[in-house]
Structure formats: C-alpha cells, structure tokens
Image (cartoon, rainbow, N blue to C red; front, side, top):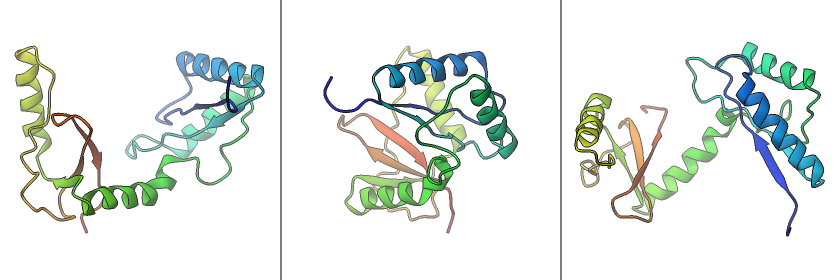
Length: 162
C-alpha cells in the first residue's frame, strides 16, 4: 500500500447508534489499526431538525462502550459537518463566480413531480437546468453545480436567504 491508511466513520446523530453503524465503525477501526492507520470520527449533523447533542453523546458513549477509540474527531472542533458550513459556502460561491454553479428556486414539489415522471418512464431523474440562465441571487433556495457530464447535476442547500 502506498500512503498512510485513513478511514472514517460518519454517523448521523438523528438517533442512537444502530447495529449497522456499529458494524461499519468496527470494520473501519479494525482496518485502520491493522494497517497502523488513522481512524477518524466525523459527525454528520446536517439534518438540523433531527440531530441533537444528546444523540451525539449517546453515539460517542456507544463507541467507547464497544472499545473503539478514534485518532481524529470530537471533541476537537471541525469534525461536525455543521462547523464546516462556511467552508462549503466559500467553495459554492467560488463555483458560482466562475459560472460552474447557479442558484435555483425550483420548489421541491416541482422537482418531486419531475422525479416521479422520470421514474414512471423508467428513466433516471436529471434536473432540467431550468434556472441556469435566470440570474437568481442568494435569495434562491438551492445552489446547483454542474458536474463533468453535461446532463448530470449535484445539489446543495444554501442555508440562508440573505
């Protein structure tokens, strides 16, 4: 193997650690330890309506109960996804400024109708790009980034309406 092994486990604190998450954490921890690598714990707390500090504590305690320790992660700052939002916004703005992303205000209901129609046609849903040339500003709901394929798009929530 070339380079140091770095593996991560990124639970979502929307509830207690479940057996599938514990299995993933265990396998990643074992792999890192076997290869004298780094086991990283990152908290995937972007579901703001369901993520709680109590669930984070419960997950950390469950991992400790399993005997799993991490080399990087809580309580060190920077390992909660919400702590990294300014970095993500900076990258999204850079993409927008270079014309590689744009704001979109498509209502979720419209996108869901288009998604269901594609599914009924047994096709993969692809965003139409209807907001690409509309010149929307930060008041729009979502930023869309064009990927390498002309018909492929990724979406990320902007988070603010300022």
